[in-house]
Length: 181
Image 1 (cartoon, rainbow, N blue to C red):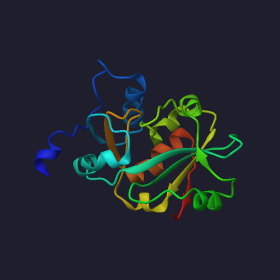
Image 2: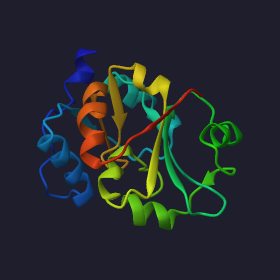
Image 3: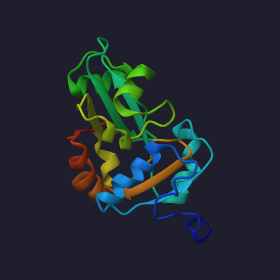
């Protein structure tokens, strides 16, 4: 693991060539005094592409799904283990809403400042009107670290789960609903 750890960074990136939302992610973690480790990598569009990232960051990267109800008036960000299958009917039943579907890209950009392939809990910092309800599978919280993209799918980071729950979520004003999927 030593060769992998040598590419991990524990301070945010230099601004040159970085998107503002990526810099905002690291700035927020720094302001909240949340320790993190991160790395740059090639574009990762799906959880299946991220196996090497799991190993490098010593995490179990989770799926982040941006969902809505049929009426498109209730929006959800679901964090679940990458190895679990998303069953729409099960999640819909657990939260008591009409059948969920993947939300249109335009809402993802409007509410979370994210694009497909880069869906991340870090996007909640842009949801100042609390339009998105965070849903977390309990298994995600059993790990020492939460892994996610810093709002862009060419980098990944990890932060301690205790700081994610105790510092990050309160700072972005989102109380999660914990599910057993």
